[in-house]
Length: 167
Image (tube, rainbow, N blue to C red):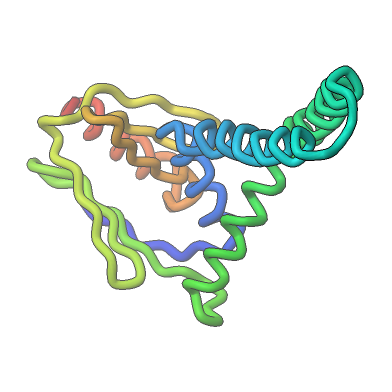
């Protein structure tokens, strides 16, 4: 079975962010964004003249503000960063063509000259969310199918049944 579709940037971005959440990339980048600047801040403050107590208070205050702002704003920062990357890679395209195919051996996705394929023998489970059909594979790999690409509920059910039978 094969389905062709087009995504705008926002739709493509939602899939990309969901994959980042599933794979742990989102969480890892958030941790890195917290740790790396914090270390630099601590080093800079440590090099400033002054008594140790004042430095420690300044570090605690500065880091608590930074971490609080990071926790509040990181999702939008991550989204905007990925949106810029998408814009850059699209080179002016407004719609992104894509194609998802499932057969006896694998599930594959083709878009903009790239193809990604996963063998069913490595599939672990599938989950259905409000927006996606998510397929989990061994070795921390994931495949998300946006529900919006199906032409109707019958087509979606047909794909779901096929996927469930393969896992």
